[in-house]
Length: 167
Image (tube, rainbow, N blue to C red; front, top):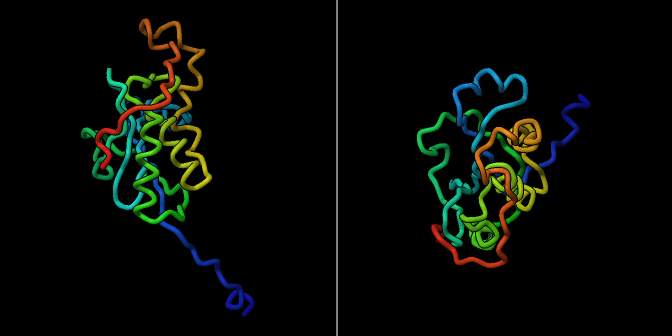
């Protein structure tokens, strides 16, 4: 009787997901220890956005069909939260944040696709992505001596860049 009187809070806003992809086959074993090599993208309003590197100062953000990144295996699709932005506001937000992520600022340790996904999710939902998604990048002090030259350098963060791939 009491259960029927308790009303559930109505969920408002549009869902924001993070799609996590396995970059290495070893993830099927390391995942259970909270480790792995992952790519991630943010899905909202039926579109996935991801960050990748290039030699250009133009934005490195790409627009994708959800759950279809370069044929990689989808480890998980996780509901992070909900955004109160409508679709147009969300598109404008993505254009704005894309300027903060030029392709030439990508670094596998300090500024990768998972950093972009976390930043975007925090701004859209005020919630972070799960820690295991980018844990190996945060633990780089354990293996940084094994990385090729230049991979462990912190890239510059240009203030302004032209938009690309985001319409």
